[in-house]
Length: 238
Image (tube, rainbow, N blue to C red; front, side, top):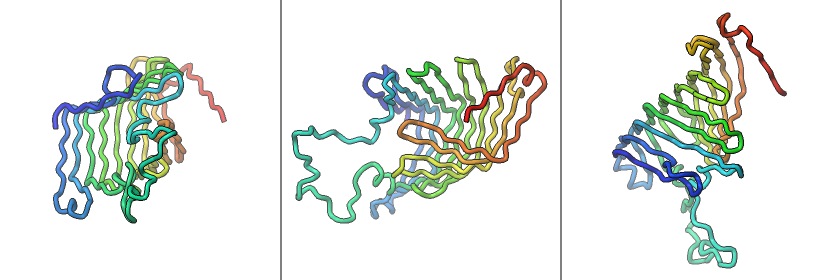
């Protein structure tokens, strides 16, 4: 597929929520007879993802996967006897995803833009590369990622790379990753990417409801050049 776009939620501007330059995917036919979807490695090129949260704290991703709402004064047709699904029938986005198996996912040259109206601090991830191994919901999958992180208020530039095992929990709405390695290299005052380097192991959790991140660090190593450390202030809040 070429030039695929997904429209944004109402009130979040004219830019699409997501767009891709090209998408390559091949679905295997035999599993379809068993109501399963198995695909070879999906290759996504030129992904652009625009994530936004308004002043009320509502994100433009929150309506994804939601069905239509039933007015409170009307009976829900799903509650009527004739609409009760037979035993074993799956409903909802979680049930659909549970029947999907990918042999792998690759993202090339991606961009993620994050805008939070409450903080007013936009962040961009550029040159995003992502490689995910066999994807089965609820099962660990190999994950490798590298990207450049840019922030303007205050100025910040960094390269981030990580490798680990990720698990998608559709019930809890989380992605949990056991990090085998994670490296963050901050740019120094001259813009070079050899200013300060932070390497670690640990666990990274992403809450899909609010895009919140939780990072537990282990075996942390910090290295900095003299020019990068000169005048640096470190502050920690616990």
